[in-house]
Length: 392
Image (cartoon, rainbow, N blue to C red):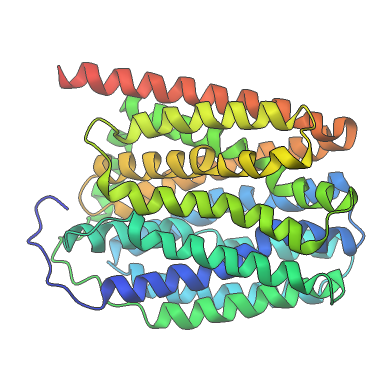
């Protein structure tokens, strides 16, 4: 990070890779199969969409408080530990909940602890790796690789255990994540703290930057375009007769493509900057979801899953890269938190809408997701033009 002497090589990157791997094992179980557990607990498509959307609304309130506290106290690592332990407790409560009201309420409760983990870990990683002259992508890819392990593990499990027991696999993944959080190395940076009164002023300045606003909008719309896929692809594929192993393989294929892009990200040419990556992500998402809306044959699904490298990974790298450069000193977690809040709010709306659309139109609901990705690509183009004009 500019302004810091480069830190010596230490155990920071290996321990961070282990943390990413642990957290994404749990995510690899949760993302494809949590909707299946919700269905097994008696929730219909509309309630599943609601159960997945409410935690994303909760994050709008949880993330600002947690991120600002972490920045003010220079306590990214400590906050990650507390959030990871609280997530274990939260998912345990979800597992014991009965009835739609109790399930949705406990999902909202666990979101208070779990949703800040991603922006905090990204801020921690970007600061620590930049100070050591290392790239984010080659370390983050271990999380994507572990996602495959979690997905395949759960895919095999649903063929031999009741869907109602899948929640305990998520709890086990959360326990491993908490243990990995305790093992994280200190950042070891000498960056001055952001003063409490300075955070508000810097935040206001950040939100007055039209390029920053355009990037946040672009990332939010592109990532929200995955709502139907995240919530209903597993239900749809199992309903047409695909077993858990094939469903897991399809999810894993998308993540393999994501890993490849993460691995190459340290070698991107200079012209392939954050806003260009966002534009590529928007275009890839628009094409992917348009084809999914047309009920493609099973043979086409592997190629469509490989497009996850564009619709998710390229957009993710672009947004994180832009925000890390735009963040004022001492506001790394707060800036990433703002991005995460906006993404969560838009994803919440998209998840809620996806339940209604899928209940009424089935796979044609993907057409709305294509429009969301396209709108995100337009916002990314606006940010690209704004940055070019500012550089002239």
